[in-house]
Image 1 (cartoon, rainbow, N blue to C red):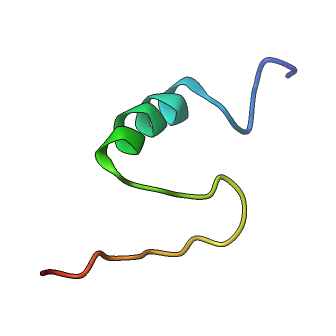
Image 2 (image 1 turned 45 degrees about the vertical axis):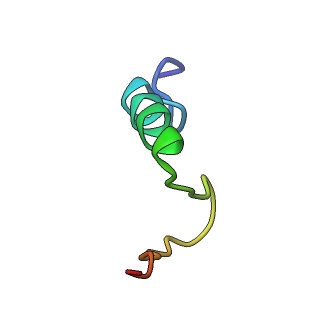
Image 3 (image 1 turned 180 degrees about the horizontal axis):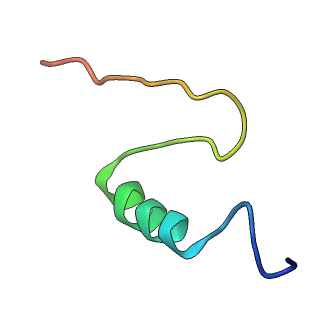
Length: 40
């Protein structure tokens, strides 16, 4: 059971590495808040 992790899993790290350079910012802990950018 010690090999089962609740955070920093391989799929989670891949998503983070893909989204961060594209400008998406997020918190790892806390409530989920969806923020949409305004259209200019």
